[in-house]
Amino acid sequence: MYIKTSLIAACAAFTFTASAQAPYFPPEGTWARKSAAEMGMDPAALAAAISYAQSRETERAIDFSDQEKTFGTLLGSMPTKRARTNGVVIYKGYVVAEFGETTAVDPTYSVAKSMLATVAGIGVRDGRIAVDEPVARRVADGGYASPHNGRITWKMHLQQESEWEGDMWGKKDDFVGTAAFGAGERKPRERKAPGSFYEYNDVRINRFALSLLRAMDKSVPQVFEQEVMDPIGASNSWKWVPYHNSYVEHGGKRVESVSGGTRWGGGMWINSWDMARFGYLWLRGGTWNGRQVLPPAYVKDALTPSANGPDYGYLWWLNTKGKNLPGLPANAYAALGAGSNTIVVSPDHDLVIVWRWHAGNPAELAKRVIAAIR
Image 1 (cartoon, rainbow, N blue to C red):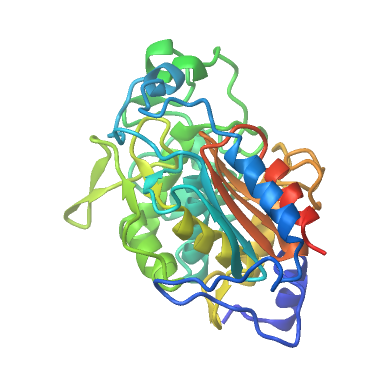
Image 2: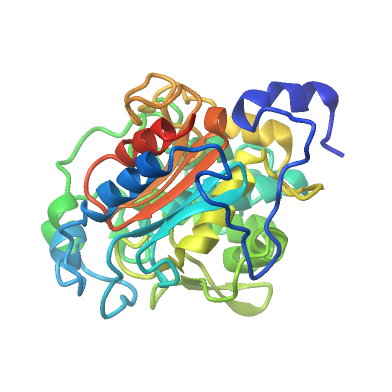
């Protein structure tokens, strides 16, 4: 077992302040609501925070007509339209605010990266992954056959410092070319040694996702459903959509490999309530109603800054320098996706905020919600 007193103590800063009353966990299909007054919050201040959020709609095209211009040639499907800005505020485990189309199942873009990190945590829990070992020890599909790629560890992938070289599903790792990468194209640069350089790179994340499939011996969505979303009581409306060409042979079967975002279509399509449950699992240190879903040590490491990233953990954005989430505590963290689709977690305030299709930094809403806490 992974539960040790010392490890739990080490994770305290990332979970919640202990109290005499056990934390509330929402059962499947429902989530208890309490008014701001019942929770000791300022109702007027909370209402003002929600009004602020509603007034900050993203300028992204509602029909996704800007997708290819922004990101490049599509590899997977896209919805016909998105919802308007919406969100959920969870304080001390209870719903204190909801606004907009929170049941809409929309792409959540790179929030899916934090979900991949969660699947990796299941791999660590089950002994299928050791973060510091080379991926090549577990994955022998040719993707790590070169001397350069052979040095890449799971941790390097998790921190986006792998510098993996190659092609995935028709996209090359260097991001060079307007047709393939749209406004996100990059100029050629010298490749660095694995583990020495951070680069936000969806081609490499997609390689990581395929490697997880190999190591877990089943599809990433299957692991996520069985080991994460079912235990936390999520709905069955979410779907992790593969690209049209991202299928591989594994164990004699044709299996889908998924992406860490919706840059080229597909990706995680999910509603705000299921995003809130996912964020709440992390707020509670990887536990859910007495069940240890993720190892405490893994949660702690995932929320520790990498050596070369911009205050980045295991595919989570951190705030130890106070720059990614200005005005929030140093131990706050977030899953961030284009659009913007965001989950902000503030352990100091026992708070999870899902805010989707908005403009600006998600910390602006979080600060206003926190100001309502008396």
